[in-house]
Image 1 (tube, protein in one colour):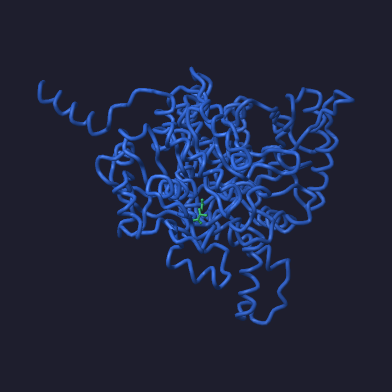
Image 2 (image 1 turned 120 degrees about the vertical axis):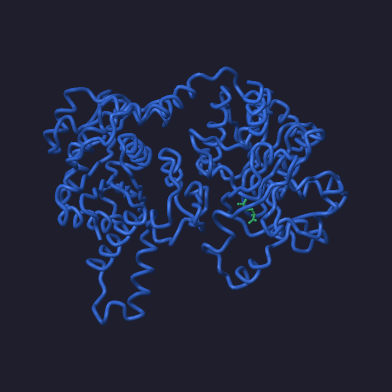
Length: 567
Ligand code: GLN
């Protein structure tokens, strides 16, 4: 049930998708936090998948993983990064989850013989989930982003749930429409009509937008602002201009220039809880994004880039952001290049191109496409001492490469690709076997946060500054324990292992063998935050950028003790 004074902000898209609704919502969340409020963000996605785990990344973008192990939309990553949250499973809702729950409840007579219908049973279940998430987070404000655009068939029930919440708690609910105002090339004038239509469509569902965020290629002028205010029935200071800008991280600061935080609080009858400039640390981070000195060339060798005639990097969004945070913290400017792993198979000489990069990342992945190309890239990085960072599959393939080219096990492979190989250095995890045999694919990998322990005198131990870590995972396969001793004898160091020491979590080559050659079974990119860059990414970037080593935490503790003694 709703807490007294709890507020709800629904963020809905108008006109078209892909205009930055998630970024707008995350930025609003950030601003409200900076005014002293505890905000929980909820993303609702209209698709029927129970989660995002089974979706092809080329089509849907990155599958983002929460601590809980829930596989969800990449927008959840934006919320976690902007608002520095560790979101809960309850903060993510899909139509599939809702329908599955309602149908299972009906099957177990949970509706006591009633005819179960989309309205009210589906909408009630959506509402129940929104309240539950607010309760679990003990928040003051719930920020709920409704996936899709006004006018879609798919999200109508979510908007209907929002309408009923508004009806029930008048004054505690706000609707923000993130719209788009095109400037057609042939006309050269910003057009407001599509936004007007979106607002009218929303009206036909019984919902009136309180605030309109007017996205567009350029800023909204006064005339159009007034026009939108009149025709869309909103106050003119509630029409916020949001032109395209250089970096998504500028958005909270830009919004605040228009005082969006105060406008929202005013509409919800709230007063800021703090007089401090809560955005100060964020402003410092944004400043660092614009004050880099040298460029750093990083290659990401993957396979989920191509859709039709377009190359998208959406599948690797958390990796891109993690690289940026570490680069900015070291005052370097990241220049990322996407290399298709397949192209290294078609053209073996292509590995020479890797020399022009300061560092190479092989990200996570599944299946056999492009695998041999990735292994060639890894071999080249290892032999030519190019800093290499392997994430999940990128770690497993580094082990395969080492087994083939250093241990001489020419047919070394992973069970995922070649079950008939005699040297399966990467094998399926024992508990995963049955799941695959049963065709149980959805949400069944080793998912979410698991602890690992680190070995002293290793890069991992040094950069984390502690020996116990927790990182997020998403995999079915693991380093085959039978090969660990031989790999270690040949120089590899397993610097991170599961607490029961059965599962290898981090592998590295000592610094005297290679400047930086390290792979993780987990996905460190999911824990990188603007103000807290991930230590492994930072070390990879530091080495790639030839920056001096910072003083270790332990060193500075010792030296300050010495200093105290001397006094
Ligand atoms: N395909 C590998 C596995 O399932 C790696 C997964 C990943 O890179 N996320 O273990």
